[in-house]
Amino acid sequence: MVKKYVTFLCFLISVNLVAQKDSVVVKLDEIFLPISKVKDFSKGYFKTKISDSLIGRNINSLTDILKFNSFIYFKENGLGMVSSPSFRGTNASQTAVIWNGININSQLNGQTDFNTISSNSFDNITVRSGGGSVLFGSGAIGGTVYLNNTIEFLKQQNHQILLNYGSFNTSHFSYNFKKANAKSYLKLGVGYNNSDNDFEYLNSNLINENGSFYNYNFDVNFGYKLNSNNELKIFSNSFFSDRNLSRTLNAPSNDSYKDISLKNLVDWVHYFSPKESLNTRFAYIFDEYKFFDDYTNEAIFSIGSAKRKILKLDYNNSISRKIQLNGILGFETTKAEGTSFSTNKRDVFSAIFSYNHLLSKKLSYGLQFRKEFLKEFNSPLLYSLGIEQKINKHYIISFNTSKNFRIPTFNDLYWQPGGNLDLKPEKSYQFEIGNSLTFKNLSVSLNGFYIKSSDLIQWVPNQTGNWSPLNVNSAKNIGLELALNFKKSLGDHNFSLQSNYSYTNAKDLKTNKRLISVPINRANFLFDYSFKEFKIYYQHLFNGNVEYLVNTIPSFSVANLGVNYQLPFLKNKPIIGFKINNIYNKYYQNTLSRPMPGVNYQITTNFNF
Image (cartoon, rainbow, N blue to C red):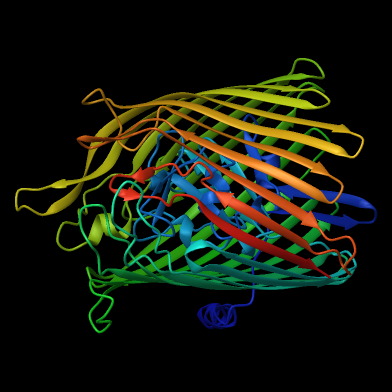
C-alpha cells in the first residue's frame, strides 16, 4: 500500500507542479512563526542576500550575478558554456546548491553548472560562506548557494515581463504572473534565452565558433491554506538547454550538449501551535544530459541520467524566546544510469538535530549534528558549532567550526573504464572567526577561515593507462573575506557601494604547491547612483593570477556600466535599461585557452502591471 501511495505521489509530481521554500513567515492568531534554516541555524556564518535589482541586471546568467556580487570564483569554459564555482579555494563539487531546502548538486559528477540555472526562476538568492554539510549534506564544504521561492498569503496580483536583447544576437524573454489572497497563492513563470554567441576572440583572428546556445524554463509555485493549522505548498522548476561547446584557442569543436532538469517538491505544513510545526516534504528530481561528439549527427551520443526521490520530516519548536529546536529525518533514493556505467542505486537515511540558545541579550550559540546511513560507506558524524557575541550596538564577533564531507559520486564509483568502488568520502574540518561592524549608513565584515581536507578524490592515470579516481590528496585553505556596504541619501540623490574582497591561500599538503584554478586575490564592487526615475550603476571585477597545471592564467579586471530609466509618463511606468559589458574591452579568460568576449551591449525593458 505504501509503495502504491509513493508511486502515485511521484506521478503527480512528475507532471511538474511545485516547489517549496525554506524560509516562511506564517501568521497564526496574530503571532508570526519564522522558520528559516539559512537565518536561524547559521550562527557565526556570513551570508549575502542578492537583491531583485541585481538579479534583473544579469538576468541572462546566474554566473554573472554571483561572480560580480559574491566571493565565489567561477571557472567558465566561455560565455554560456560550463560554469563551475570555486568557493574559498575548494572545487566545484564542494560548493552546494540548495533549491528550496533540497541539495541539487548532480548525483553523477557532484557539481552544479551555473549556466544551467535560470535566474528568473527564484524570488531570492542567498550565499552562505563556510561548511554546511550538517544541514544540507554532501558537498557543502566551501560554501552554499540558496535558491528560494517565497509564498506569501497576502492579497496581490502582478504581471511582469522582461525583455532583453544584446550583442551576438543574444535575447532573453521572461514572464511571471502572481496572484494571491489570504487563502491561496499562485505564481507562474516562463523564461527563454538564446544567443549566436559568435564573438571575436580579442588578440587573435578567431571567432567563438560553435558557441550558440538556447534554454528555456517553466515554473509553478502554488500554496493553499487548508485551515488555520495546515498549509499545502506545491512547487516546480523545469529547465531545458541545448548548447554547442565553444572551440578553444588551440582547436575547433563540433561538440554539443543537451540538459534536462525537472525539480518538484510538495510541502505540507502542520502547525501544532504558533511555536511548533511539522513539515512533511516529498521531492522528485530528474536530471539528464546528452553529449554529442558531432552536433551534425545527433544519432550518435552518450547519455547519463539520475532520478531522485526525497522524503523529509522537519520538526520545529520554539520552546521559548531563548531556545529553538529543529529535528529532521530524511530518506533519499537515487537511481542513476548512463552510457558509461550500468544502472546503479543508492539509498541514504539521514538524521539531523539543531539547537539554538540565546544565553543573554548579547550572547547566543547554535549546535547541530548530522548522521547519514548508507551501505556503501561509513558516513562520519558531522557537527557544527556557531557562537555570536554582541560587544556593543555596533560590533559583533562570531566563531564557527564544523566537520563536513562529500561522498563519491556515481561517476567516481561506476564509470567504465576507471570507476573505483573502494573510494572513501572526502572529509573536511573548518574554523572561522568573524567580525561585523554596523552603523547607520555603513556595514563592514571581516572573516578569517581555515579549512583542512583529507581523502580528496582525484582522477589519475592507473596501471592500465585509464584514468581512475583515488583518495590521494589532502589540502589546507587559509584566507580572509572582507565585505563593505555603504548607503547615503541626499534629498532625491541616492548613493550605494557594495564591495567584496577575498584572499585565499590553498595548498596541496603532499606537494606543498598551490591548488590549481584558485586566485589568491579576488575583488568586486558595485556603485549605484539614482535620482528620481534615473539610475546608473558600475560593476567591477578583479581576479588575480590563477595557476593552471603547467600554465598560469593572467590576472584581469573587467567592468560593466549600466543605465536604467523609469518612464513616468506611461501607464505602469515601465523601465528601460542599457548596459555595456566589458566597457574597457579587456582580454580575459577564466579557464585556459577559452577567452571571454570583449565589449558588448544589451538593452532591457521591464514591464510590471
